[in-house]
Image (cartoon, rainbow over all chains, first blue to last red; front, side, top):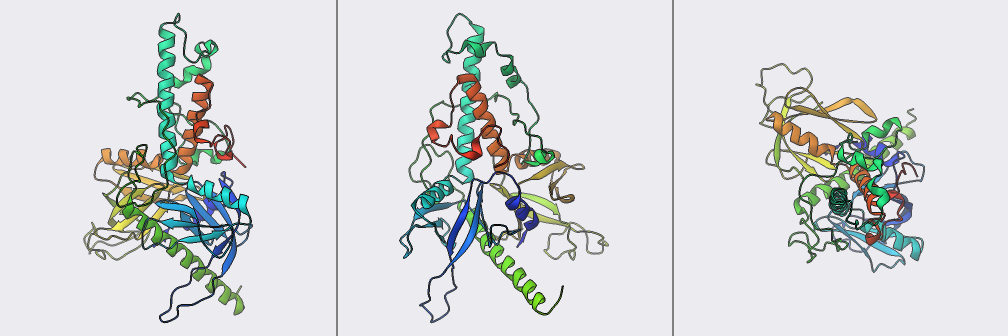
Length: 264
Length: 153
């Protein structure tokens, strides 16, 4: 399977904000050989970096490229009953996908990781963004209404905002910075999206989406989830996970063998 | 919205024998210089663009869409390039100019980084108008990744 792994490695190691980092011990998943049922469980200490919906792990903290990648879509994060203390697992809706069992250094670290990973999915972020988009539209509308009838007191109670010229740019459409590309020059500026013209929804905030249990039968009864998960695509990700790990392992073995043979 | 199950012709920077997948758009006798136009099923799933041979369930490849640039090329064609190798372009030919524009718009908004910055922007604007932080209800207002004006950690 092809992947733009140079871009992936670059994204993993560049200075864009990481949402969480730290050492974790990762359980080694061994293949079950025929007739061989018992094997010792072992763990490898890895440096983990969470960026958005991507969990990278590196052999060392200063490694230049990740040895693994987990796409946090269609998964649940839960504490698990392992022999190890402070263990948690990332499990996927896709039945064929392997789970990742991770062990933190302590209670606080484990809780921080579980919390960060639970909020890492693209869907969660999209939900929050859409909600804020609606809220901004509502706020713009209230503002416009206040401006039309200045005698009426505005719900915001802050008259200073009504005449603040800084709010005028909301009517314009500043350029959209796509996909993080435009900040390569180092400039930092706000994303430009005007108040949407279309109908807004209610300003009622939805609850945090519950962890999805079963992708196939739809969500576990949360009315706030506007979309159902996409089960077929999670199979794509589990293929990507297993491919990525194997590919890197193969490349490293080849490199190490060349080293032994004295090649530069 | 997510675009899925759209058939796209994909010009990949790889040389392959014509007709290998049964769906090449050039006749076999055409000399191949750089690449063959191959028909692929292209699916945008969150911040990944997967591509499949037509009628196959498993993808043959994927592109992570972070730190990438989507560029309109010639008619019906757009390209994706990445920061660390800007001259290398993954080109896609669509069936129509309209479809091309739809894909460009969808892909430009496909990254997690784009969503993160949208969120920071909306949060900032809402706070300016209402004086309140809309992220407090989610309990995520203190997270480093959502801080206004934060670019590096």
